[in-house]
Amino acid sequence: MARVLITSAIPYINGIKHLGNLVGSQLPADLYARFQRATGNEVLFLCATDEHGTPAELAAAKADKPVDEFCAEMHEVQADIAKGFGLSFDHFGRSSSPQNHALTQHFAGKLAEAGLIREVDDSQIYSHADGRFLPDRYVEGTCPNCGFEKARGDQCEECTKQLDPTDLINPRSAISGSTDLEVRATKHLFLCQSQMKDQLDAWINSKADWPVLTTSIAKKWLHDGDGLQDRGITRDLDWGIPVKKGTEDWPGMEGKVFYVWFDAPIEYIAAAGEWAEANGKTDADWQRWWRTDMGAEDVKYVQFMGKDNVPFHTLSFPATILGSGEPWKLVDHLKSFNYLNYDGGQFSTSQGRGIFMDQALEILPADYWRWWLLSHAPESSDSEFTWDQFQQSVNKDLADVLGNFVSRITKFCRSKFGEEVPESAPYGAPEQALIADLTTRIRAYEQHMENMEVRKSAQELRAIWVAGNEYLQSTAPWSTFKTDPQLAATQVRLGLNLIRLYAVLSAPFIPNASSVLMQALNCDDNSWPTDVEAALSALPVGHAFTVPDNLFGKITDEQSEEWQVRFAGTRD
Image: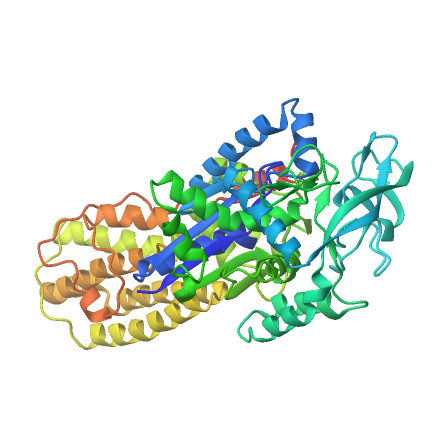
């Protein structure tokens, strides 16, 4: 049994996430976690809310609530929505936890001991209109590299170049839009990433199996222009983790907090500590996942994230871990995704454009969204959500292929043999041919899942569903029954066992529908089909079942048109 540690990029606390956020990190991470558990491996799947920084303060002010109260409430909201989508986190933590405070301060102390943190007399932009320093993400302007007019002060979303606010052309406050800005002197701590450039480069070069998207972004930051730059890790803010050198005060850093991008990835580790505490476990129980001197040397660690998060996870967070000089587990595989766009434009949390996770669950069950998003995951390039495409995929894949198969075989069996697996002859040549075909396909499906090839996995799963339909069409038990009832019973027995097989194989993609099928089959044997022939005899003769309700209802043209209009504008 392998041990697999899985983290997905932690969602920001300032609002409910849209479907593009979901498919870029949490949902494919859940798919992988469910598959690894299903095939017998030990999994620790961690996520959390990212709660520090200016956006949290501003969102709390807009809601007229203290920032800690606002974050606690939004954590519960995001946790509930995650449950609604069937995200099977072992723990959904908070970056504001005591564990993350202690670990972030610990790492800062270790980095300082290693000579990897320096104090800098820095210049930061102050907005007279807002009466505050503006953290880099809250300065907008034109990118000096590509000319994108809405570049942020930390990074241009268009060309992904790392920036400082003072690099921007025609800078303005992202809070008020004011251009009445002043550069003021302040003092901050910088992580000396440049000292670790060669070490990071060698580490990234060793990851031959990483997606090209991941390594190309990392290499760009390492080598473009002046190469990897030192990075400020403190901010002049009230809300965040107070700057300390381990447990000691840091002279000159009074009243400052760590930069959210320094403490947020450390929460992956802290979340394991939260998980242990919440479940009555010891420190050793979480350290065996994260420290190679405590048992983590045999752990496979996989991260999932959108491409905008790649630089921090391939450079800054590894620099923190490597620079500490301590035996922490580094990521083995970083699965990154391009953007999912929305109906001719971009999803945007800040602009409220597109369909958001809570809205999606209001109109359709989670499995509809899970299937479409995963089967159209933006792996090799950006992809686009359109209502027509969504309707077509749901109706053809879920309703016509899988749902129709289940309905036909269960209803036919009930009408001719009753609600139990009929007594029949051994499987013949058509059944053996199907078993051989399914064996090949299931092994391919497993390989795609193991390789985190999300779209290929979905395509192979759909082909497995199609194979059952083609078997039914070619054998036509409803016709066979007229001349050879026992042969028809054999075909039906295989069909009922196929439903169980589909429920097991489909559970990582559509867990709710899978559960419905297993309940209808009165079956709790969800063992993975290592032997397909044996798996297709799992339901013995005489085994009772019930005919499930319609597994997937079709989306009508009227519904599709209504939703397209409803979600064309912006969310309040």
